[in-house]
Amino acid sequence: MRTDFSYSNIDADGFRANVGIVLTNEAGKLFWAKRIGMDAWQFPQGGIRPKEHSEVAMYRELKEEIGLLPEHVEIIGCTRRWLRYRLPQKYIRKHSKPLCCGQKQRWYLLKFIGSENSVRLDSSDSPEFDHWRWVNYWDPVSEVISFKRKVYKQALREFEYLLLKNGM
Image (cartoon, rainbow, N blue to C red; front, side, top):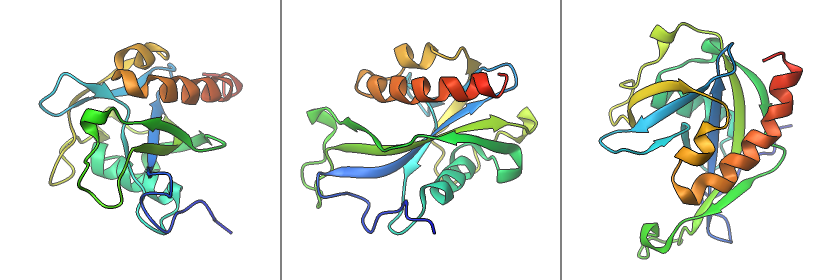
């Protein structure tokens, strides 16, 4: 029975449930996407809806953000626990209820088995990204916005073994 879902998007501590996606190709490079209209790069990620399992949310976000379907990827692994980061004060929406102080994320490591032509950054009504590229494994840790770096490092450390185990 699947139990990895929440009844609310934001938990009692103020963390919004979210999935993060690390997509790797056969060469062990990672999918890195640029936020639309900004000079900010990140992994695909998105919120988990109430009562939605994190794996279902991951596939939904994969399609919404980069146009990929389940047949374009294989799940290699998932973080064993929620990884959390706090938002800097300037990003906290102080008038929203309940107050969200950060994200708690379940990260997925996926192997890309589709064609690069399958990647569609315009697959939703409000695209999040306007460019993407393949990067070296540890590059995202130093390139992502500073408040996400610890979580990125934790996820990549956990996934490093899985990549080696899978010959990547």
